Length: 437
Image (tube, rainbow, N blue to C red; front, side, top):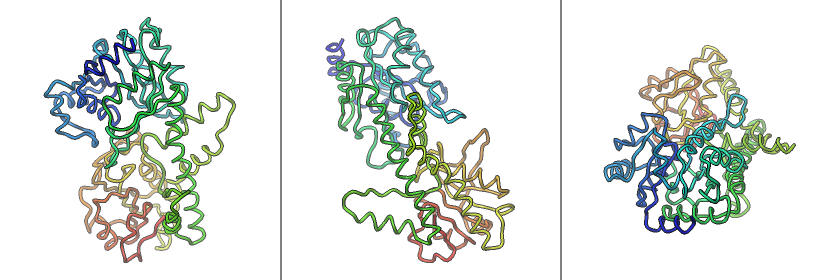
């Protein structure tokens, strides 16, 4: 099996299947197809399937003309029918792994997708989980489902491994193509063959590790590292406010050190598909061993508190004008979880809006990237234009995303008060009406 697959990889005779055509899956499918491998994307959402088959892109990190060309050339197609799994030699599982209402891992999409794969899995196939999860998922959850559902034996009839996705939406330098990958397979042969498949597609380095669990923990480490350091800087931001010190100037000064320091920045909370979620996966798994991740859990509590803290600060700003949040109009600028993207998954701005409305504030938002969003079953729409009338109508303008295509000079000119939680207005000279987190 090893030599057969290595030969097929070298000859571009592998047919690729990508399960889940979202922010991770579609860019991966496009890169596989661009490398000359016929690729089939699988997704339960008919709208995504139709858009891919029509060559219409819906992911920011995918180049429109690339997608259209690959579809027209027959290198890329999409379907909701898992029966086509029998036609593929390499399967990448890229489905969501959110938290449930109890803040515990929800692996239902991974479990369901794997069960569907098992029904049609054939011999001499590589299966790779890319979805972020807790250490042990590949061997404890995926392997038994595949073996029991297919009647095949891992390592003998098919290869299985884990390779964590590394997608940073909106990153202008690192995309799927040039970001290094980590591969951990069940057995040395699986790792070698799966790594060969990624090397045939990507420009970034491929790091082979000794097991899926190592690769799974590595991914958790990446994002927990950021979670903890952001938690530290958020806590210092709260302390610095009490002390009358600018945390932003402190960070700028510390950043002059050429070694031993990496800058992190405060904000209204954490957003995105990884950093706010991954530590919960690790803490949940750690309890199985009677272990409590105290440092991680502390940072999670700090970061989770930030939306409410920012609303408290907003209330104090309005108090100076003899106004209460209750009944005041607040204009929120930006609901995306980071600058210059349309992704609002786990965005702290959504919780900021929720907390503001709990106080009785009247909230409207403007985001040139997110024209509408759905949160807890409700759909909200952005104001059409950020102009003098809209800005003057607000008792407080609250900046919660650092978009670069917003006229912040206009905001400063006409706003009664501004609470800038991202320090995006740092270059505005007249700061009489601006307060920074």
